[in-house]
Amino acid sequence: MNHNKRQLFLLMSFIEGGSVMACELIGAKLMAPYFGTSLYVWASVLGLTLGGLTLGYFYGGKLSRKYAGNEKLLYYTLSLAALFLMIMPFTSIIIMDQTIVLPLEIGAIISLILFMMPPLILMGMVSPIIINLLTANSDAAGYSAGTVYAVSTLGGILYTFLMGFFIIPYFGLKIPAVISGIILAILPIVLLFRSKQKSLVALIGIMMLSSAASLYPRQNFNEEYQVLYKSDGILGQIKVVDHPSYEITDDNRIGRALLVNNTLQTYVGTDHNFDYSIWNWSHYFPTAASIFPKGSKVLLLGLGGGTIVKQMNRMGYDVDVVEIDKRVGEVSIEFFNLDPKTNITIDDARHYIKTTDKKYDIVIFDTFLSEAVPEHLLTIEGFEDVKRILNKEGMIMSNFYGFIKGERGRAARSVYKTFEEAGFFVDLLATPGQENSRNLIFLASLSEKDFSNTQYSEPNYEKIDNLYDFFIERRFIDLENAVVLSDFKPQLTKLYTKAAREWKKNYNDYYRKHFSK
Image (cartoon, rainbow, N blue to C red; front, side, top):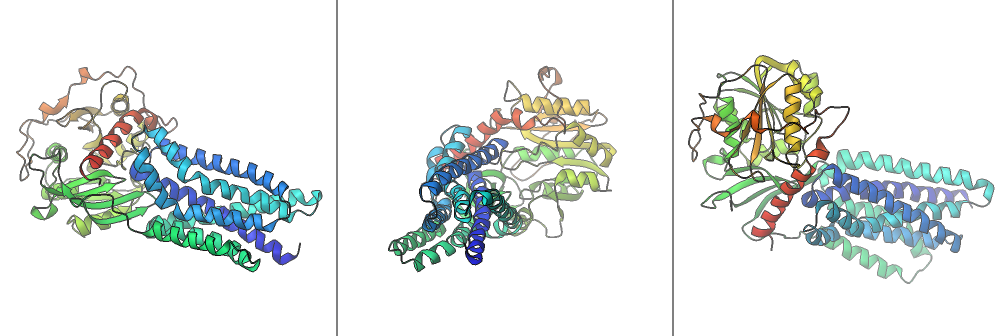
């Protein structure tokens, strides 16, 4: 084989390796609005990526033996892989619209098998075919195989960094999928053209139509659901939507929502310049915080639409915010009337806690990402880190799921036990409503607090005179099967899976019921 042809095949291997990683990352992010970003979703993505490649290696090996030396087999395989990659954003929506009614794990696996595995199987076939084309004799087989897999892996590394840090955050998911497919298809299509394949015109036509279909803006919701902003990034899908507050307020008034992976993060009224939340549970944070004097230092971990920041500012507190996703800060300023002068640090919350030299009177954990809780924050080591930046009379407030009983409440009980093990006095506040629709707020401090004289009110909501009416007494919290959460034995994701699954299902059902066409 001449040197130029060898280099050409290795270039194809490089692009194929990168396309595999693009397919995996895009596939995982396409899942987020429907099935979330939990460990179970990522495990499904990783497992089925390996499964698709395994099948591809097997069948690629069989075909390369049957059609030894046939270069057209490589070109057709790459072209078909590119086609399936390009249409993936379109086919995934069609598929997940149907599978969303299934249990989370089953729905995620079936969806990925149908829209992500086909391109991965085809891309897995590429390496054995190229190795066969490069290998003139058995003595060179090992060298050829090692070179092909090294070059393919190098492409995967480069694409992973480019997709994760630059392309997906800035361009979303559809454009990167189509462009990745085009790059994967260019060389094989050119070579097929040179070999005068009659099927080339048809293949190009299909790919062009599929690209157009993938990029065509698809309307999933009725006219009451007005999407003002949408962005797909490595941390999930963000949308800003104006829609009625069905099942949340009696008058079903219009509210502006920040949704991450189709889960409400912030929901404010369109009156009063978007300054006040429609949710009643959000008023319990400032009510509990009101026992501190003006000028207190507050650290908010997780920005959302900025509701808590505005509440703390109205109370005269000095607020620092840590938010991991830069887009959230930009959206909060543009669509939710957040003061552009707000001190927002783009960082992981635990990393900020470990590295800051500041001291705070109140540290607020509001770090849900869709239905997922960053478990590295809610460990005994994490709470010890917070102690270092917490003033002696300071307090931690942490948002959590509303479940406290049975297996679904084991995660919350374990967080409670971990706070106690770290030396905190813990009060547990439950907002009104059933377990599946309420929030729990942990109030943890190094000295007992008096919440009998809270001072906070907002338009449309009366001041809460006695916060103790909403506390769950310690004697009603059974910690027998609760565990102490640790960095060295992560268990929180496993413990809250049932709660997260029901939480996510409730949101999906809500939007399908009221806003899907």
